[in-house]
Image (cartoon, rainbow, N blue to C red; front, side):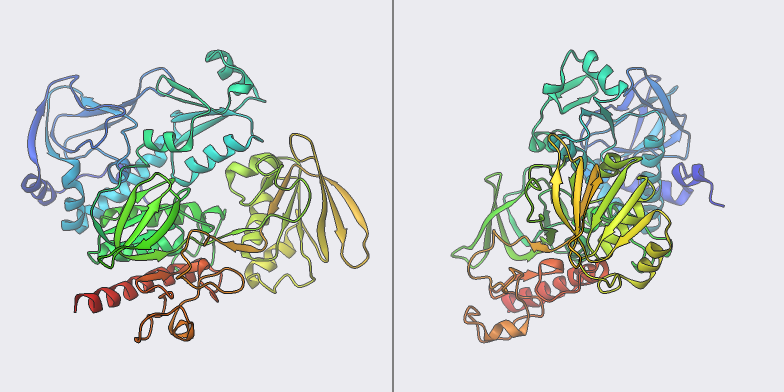
Length: 545
């Protein structure tokens, strides 16, 4: 059995310490002197060669020692890769000697020392998990569980793996927080972090404060990846690892539709399964390790070609990105049901994902899941752990039409899940939040009123292509057309055959769920993203010649 402490706090070998000496510089600290503090950005990595350093945090208002790094150990966690502010303070415990590697040199260290890189990355990730499992509060989010803006903030933190604690104003800890900050329910959502308290913060401002959103360099990129789902993340990993200057932008954060899955069990290499959020986070860190750049929440307004033949993409922030190629990996989202009150109750009982954030709404009550694909099945299985009862609604009578066999069997054998064939949502009831769902059998027309606090919709994927120019051809359902077949389209301007994933606009590619005719599976999207980089290389080599 693996010792958690050995993985989280491993010893550096003599050879590894000598390699660090070549990259970094030696520094001494006296007792109580800080190596770096809470909130510091671009902080250094330190290997301790003599003495000790302590890790302290004070998110609860009281300073607490989290860990001690002894001689032969090192500082740091995942914030060193993401470029976010430090969540702890590290200071000398007695006089000590260290080797400092600056933040600018850390990626060089990870790239040039692969064995050390593996040790560091495993330790960094486990340290963050151990911190989250301790008394550490991180960012406090105070609000109502059925409030749209509160849910949006929590979803953003969930996707970006921001350690946070949600305090519901309907419960004692949330009510106490309102009293503590001398605010009322109308001021929510409230963000509190290390003495800073903000009422109704904008997502953009939160992202900037946490180091998630950042200014984009004014230079030419090899490829701009729009969308950070499995396709976009795979493209970022392969593009950056193969030396392409790669930028990824996303409207929310890593994961896309897959990031909303509570558990994916048919992704190769993970026999016991993993959550979509964990899969996305692994891909995100992997891409950062190779030098990819990320920023969120950022939406694309428009795309055009400049006189020099490069693509110019305008972002919602007003920034312009110049790039040789563009990969459209914006995916698709589930459609709203064409029923009165559906839009009004979104975030207040109606959801399009089933993670720990949304599942809170249906604890000890009935949850209804609409859809027959793998995402709906995974949601039903996860919600069955939280809700008293789960109803899975199918318009037809074949659970296996769009769902994997292993998942369909589990659902049929689960005592807490009821599969309702030929059943559709007919009416939604509730004032400030969802209270009742009326369902109808589409054969007998029989109606049933169900007390329900959580309706989860996984039907009718809609592609995110509204920002694309007319030069990019779409199919009848709005998905992007790609490959040699577009040569027959009147929009294809060249004599050469388009690359497999190339759109009707040369140098613009599409991958994953947004692409016409794809299989809507996580592994397929990731494979598409890897293939897209092959297409980018082919395009750039033609351009160079």
